[in-house]
Every structure is written in structure tokens, then in C-alpha cells.
Image 1: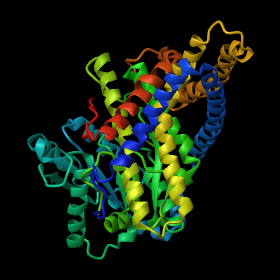
Image 2: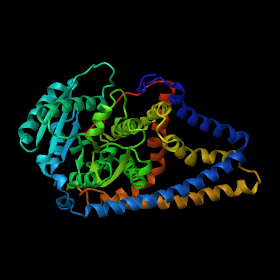
Image 3: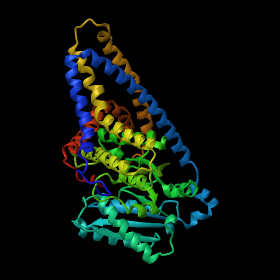
Length: 494
């Protein structure tokens, strides 16, 4: 075996999540006809546990929301005056891009310029692709003219296409950018210490909170062993939320609330989407893996394995905002949403990587291995099966057993209905909270649009299945069959 897991190296663990999902559906269907009473009992227990989980989860969401509000109210740039080492910190901001128009690049660079942290402590890395070389060259030239003297550095890289051992996508571009920046810093800043550099890997449409880099610097300077931690902000997909379709908005806020729930429990937190990390760690692991799709979460596990389990994620309770999926029409936006959710669900590819790494590393405590293995498997399994089990399969045995006089069977529909009503408390909390996270309404959007934003949550069960279960099942089935997924860029437009 090679040091780094390759697709196909352990087919059992690639097949395991899909077999678990399809095994569940198969047994549920068969037993619904062969032993409906057993299935009804299972569904009742499952829904009760899910109700408990929803209410339990909402407590963590509310805690994170409160911490977000409290954190945003503090002047973090002023607090940096108490930390002399803060003036020496340099932020590297990686912005990989492919076929995005200049207005998107421009808006992101403007937001970085307007951040409260000193511009002269920011180095921006704009990374294009050779496959879009002509357009990117024009965009890079405009960026240099407009922002070349704003930051400490504005570095431009172009990732060659067709390199051996790569999957075209964000991960391979980031890997190239990392190596190019490493050479640049060694040549131009030989005295700069790795420990004084923090990297933020942002999607090109990422708009960071005005205090993001100030708060990140404060955390880095005050956290114990800061180079053994990544830093995960709140991910909002709200740049264009007022113009997005209702299913896209529900999925966008659903992702944010999931992350809210995880931020309060950092012991189970992985990195996701746009986030920050130590430059020293990136150099130690030799940058992002270039032959996978889910580089945002894989980079955490690369560090976790490299440091023998001595690596963590520190919650950063300020947001970074990105675009929700958009399209030329309603249907195209829904198609784009499905593709995006399937790409996120492709994080199931980490399971064989984890098992491979855990087998080789005898220094990681066994309890940590079990915890990370279980959390990953359970999360992917629940993502794929829970919505269908609750909203579809849960009613099948009741239909099959209709007319039987068993008291439990007779009472089951009423019990399930009551459980669903209680679960709606969580939906109501999400609906209200989503209104507090909305950006300012554009002038061309009607003033009563917020009402639609509130009542759109009645679509949650349908969205939960179509853009939750289905893409997760799709991803796990592809991995099970060895039909490995490539990287699909989410379309962005202004």
C-alpha cells in the first residue's frame, strides 16, 4: 500500500456505506410485507429517537446562534492591541477560480480590502486554470491594476492542465497554488516564520465578515498550540439568497444550521467549505490532496493523521458568506442544487481513507479512531436514509397492515402524526432563525418577500428527500460501484 489512499485500494470500505444504505431499504421493504408489525415498532422507535435528536440538535443551534451574535458585537481589532505578536501575523488568502467573471472576483477582493484587519498584513493568491487561461489573464490583469497596491502581495498563479495524478478541480488547483506560494515566500520573504502565517482557503465568491481576520488572528494568538488547529467559520450561502429558488434557500440554510450544530461540539467537527488553517500544517502535509473531490474536509484528516491524532478544529463564530446555487431558470437552479449536494455527499470517500490511515497509525488512541469512524459512518448513513425512512418507508407497513385489529397497529398512525407535529418545533425554530441571518434585501425585491422566506419551510420534507437523501444515495452508490465522481464547479453569476 502507498502512504496515501488511492481510489480502488480498499473496495470493501468503498462499498460499505452503499451496502449499509441499500441493505436498510431492502430489509425495510421486505419486512414491511413479511412482518409489518416488527417494522412498525422499529419505525416508532426510530421516529422517537429522531424527534429527540431534532430537539437536542436545536439546542446546539441556538447556542451557536447566540455565540455568533455575541462574537460579532465585540471589537476584535481593538482587542488585538493587547497581543504584541498580532502585528507580525500574515494572512494568506487562497482564491482558486475557474471561469468566474471579473465582477465576482472584484467583489471578493473589495470585501478583503474593506476588512478591518490591516491590508498590509494580507497576501492574496489568485489561482486560475490553464483551461481558462485567456479569460483568467484578463481578470488577473484587471485585479492587479485595481488592487495591486492595496495588499502586501497579490500573487497570481495558473494551474497547468493534464498533470499526472490529478483530478481537475479545486483541490488540485490549491495544491499547485500552495507549492507556488511556498517558493515565492522562500525567495521573497526568507525570514518569515511558518508559525506567523495563517492561510484561508476561500471559494472565489466568499465574502468574509468585516472582523473575520481580526478575530481569526485573536484566536490564533490565544489558542493553545495554534498550529495544531484549523479554524472553522459559520458558512452562509446568502450572497444571492433573495433571488434564489425556495428549495435552494432551504438547502442553503439547512447546511448553515447543520454547521451551527457542529460548531458547538468541536470534538466532532471537521473543516467545511471556506475556512482557515496554519501555513505550517499545510507545509507539513505537503498541501491539499490533488486527486480527490472533497478537499475542504480531507485537508483536516490529512493533518489529523500526520500529527497522529493531535489536531483539531477551533470554532470561529463569525460568518463567511457565499453564493447559493443559481441558474438561468428554476429548473437549472434545482439541477445545480442536486449536483452541489451530491458533491458534498461525496465526502463519503473519506471512509476508506480513514480506515487506511487508522490501520497504519498505531499512535492515535483507539477511542479517537472509533469516534471518528462512527461519526463519519453514522452521519453519511443518516443523511441518505433518515428522510426516506421517516416520510416514505415509515407509512408502508401501516398500509400493508391496514385493517388488522392489533392495538399497536391501530394507534401507530396517530403516534407518528404526533411525533411529526412535535418535530415541527425544530422546523419553526429554523424558519425564524433563518430570517435573522438574511442579508439586506435588495431594492428590486418586494418588501413582503420575507413572508415567502418564512412559509417556504413547508417544503422541507420534499427538499429533505430530493436534495438530501437522493444525492447522498447517489454518491454512496457510485462509490460502492467504483464509479468515482469528478469535480463539478457550482455556477456563480452576478
